[in-house]
Image (tube, rainbow, N blue to C red; front, side, top):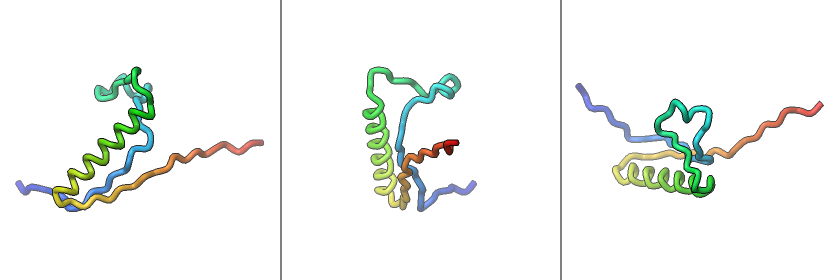
Length: 78
């Protein structure tokens, strides 16, 4: 068997990060943290993202990142 690896990754930066009540029941990894503010949780997620990105780059792998803005599409008024 041949070992596979890549020299370039694409990562999307987290904009919002919170437990989704609709999927948490069936997702073992989603845990609601009630004693911490949502902005602090998002800040930690972004820090973890950048730490992972930096660790990957230190191993010589190119990383392209994308920061998506939250887009709100409203329904037309009649």
